[in-house]
Length: 147
Image (tube, rainbow, N blue to C red; front, side):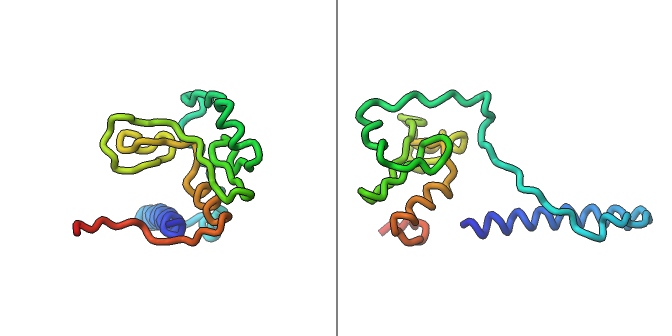
């Protein structure tokens, strides 16, 4: 999944560069010396929904706070916890749509919340990394079989 996302990003960059070069050639303008060397692409952080639109998470109830006190938070939002001593990954989720039809169980905040029951303020790769740290092996996506 991660390789496919990275590959799609490269295709978009190549398409943009080819379009820019063909415009210069069709206009008959000489290419500036800076176009000979590709510019270094700086990663742009994806902060999800605007921080101003986000409300802060409420404090954990006492019983849940006890569950995560020995666990390690894997993200700055403290919504994904790794507990190696008990070999578990704890996710702090919110109910996104209590009366919606189930298409997905869990999605990142601000992403298809109308099709899911739970949402989490985390990136999927953080949860994936936590599962790998617990010794899980990557599998294949689930497939529907009408039988």
